Image (cartoon, rainbow, N blue to C red; front, side, top):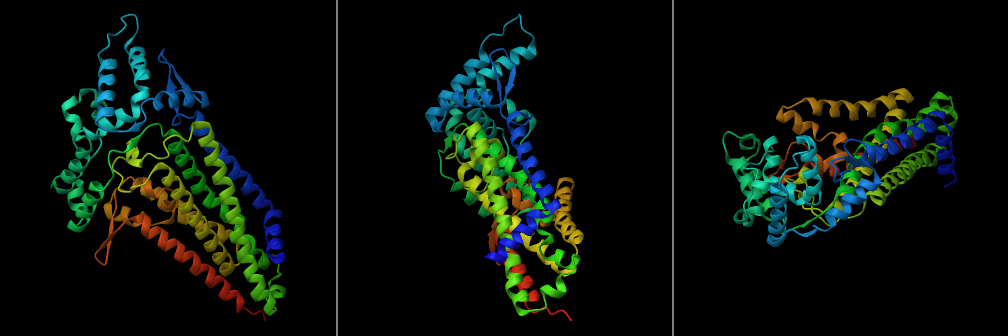
Length: 420
């Protein structure tokens, strides 16, 4: 253990490591600030039509939406629809301009936004979202509400079997039946309510994990490479103890350091956001929000948060193992830092630009997607030996296995290394 602690101290004393840690903390802080006060963060529109941001705005929104939280059954749907129609049919104030009047009505509907959003999604008339779908909710009639959950399944079937849709050629018959069964087995009616805290925590964690994978390369790159840069390798690998115990200590120190940094930063980010924005909605299924209405994953927001943290940890451990292996093989800090950065950033940029279906299917399996497995902008499935699997399953198995393999290879190489 003394050797492991010695290696950790060597990591911490490097100026590049200290700078990388500082940058990581700044990025984590910036992510927290962005979700609290940024344009994509939680906001509240007051009775005058003015927008407020920050913790006070989140508290007002949470308190307002709590009144309309609960099981989204027929009774709550009817009650919410009646309230939406009442607000929408209220006479306008002739002394106010159109924009202000619209903002005031929006402020009155904020308490109903989780349910209003789902009404838009259910009755929009198709699987894919269109701009005009935002204005559907108030046009829904009470007699249509019994079809609220049924519509989600029907839209999927139409999308999969309409020859003019993108879903018709994207999936095999086996995959289509898998998707339909998945939709039909979602437990309904589900819980609905204020989930902004969990959604913003997911967003902040995404950026922290993604850019942290690049910074972790700077932290770990010198574990092996510095021995060659300092010309200490001739001493380090000259004895069996150095090759065996020393290499194990370096690998342990690298993984232990990554583990401590990851969980310290990510838990701090999540707890900070949830404390200020609220823990409400953790038991709501992800399908209860706009971004995940069509999700095939039957999980709650609390489970989504746990899975994201676990997947991000697997990604950081994979990057750490890759960095140490490349550094040991190349004997260069620069190369070991560049390789993971390219592996993360290039596929991420390509995915934002490419629309080719097969290219997206391949890019989804690259490590950058471990940061947001459940937020893929395109629904992708794989059929392996007749079994339909999701990218999440493949990525977890693939990168966990590769991490263990690289750890074993790195240790085996240096256990047998001899300097002549």
